[in-house]
Amino acid sequence: MVAYTGIQGQNILIVSSDPSDPTEGQIWYNSTSNLLKGYANVVTNAFASGGTMNTARGLIGGAGTQTAGLGIAGYLGAGSYTAATELYNGTSWTNNPTGVNTPRGFIGACGTQTAALAVGGYGPAASSSVESWNGSSWTATTSLPADRYGVLAVGTQTTAIAVNGQQPLPAGLTTSWNGTSWSALPGVTNTARGYLMGFGTQTAAIAAAGRGAPGAATNASESWNGSVWTNTPSINTARFTPGGLGAGTQASGLIFGGNQNPGLTGATESWNGSTWTSNPTGLATARTNLTGFGTQTSALACGGQTPSVTGATEEWTGSSIQVRTITVS
Image 1 (cartoon, rainbow, N blue to C red):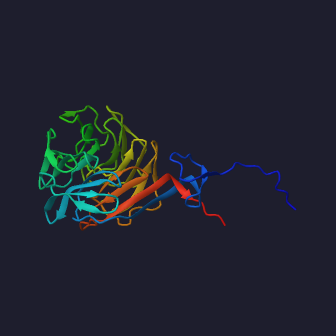
Image 2: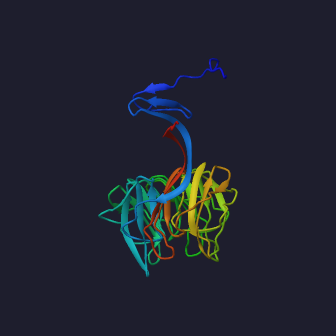
């Protein structure tokens, strides 16, 4: 017979409500719900369907988070562009009464659902237009020094950079925004290309993928420190898409979808600050000309072309620390 008298352990905390600040690995019993719970690292790393946009479109700009997102303008097909702006609440999209002042696609965008910036674009010609969003309406502000479309916009409404773009050839430009005016920076990407994917801030960003002069997809990846671009390990799937699609920070990011020219991809890759890792599953629908934003663990992908325009939305859930119910039997 096995003797259990020598086994010792820690008592499980009994509480009437879940702790507000648990630590990873902590376990407790909730006497109100009569459930045994724990705080653990949960790995999902997959997309799930979200609410469909009211206006299907490609070449769309986007900003915000998975539960407070912004879909900006875009291409409707057949040479037509829209000014429509939509808001996402984590479940569904709502049309905003007013859209951008200049209907266009290929917009670079950054910021939040209540304070965003729409940079450059095309519709039906290259544009230098820049517009500021206050949560309900767009206001034209200081234009870019030159017409550009398909730029990567990174940062906030008041501190951002616009990276590269098409003029119509790929430009290797980095332009800084201080909330009032644009200034050309000396830092030029090592690989001149448009239609970048990326994420980060005005002084700490990642620019990946892109389309070179002959239209070829690239797997280049570069890191920005506020003054210079430095090559990093390449992404695994060469691709490009306008609008600066990407989610996260310089140390923890995500890219998905794009055009491989030829062919579209739903491939998803994560960045840990030093390397890119391909995720086993990608977007449910391979597409390009979509937008994406959020974080590496909670991102949104919406709109795009398959090649027809779509309003499909997919929500990404990565690895995160969550309260979980422990099942015992």
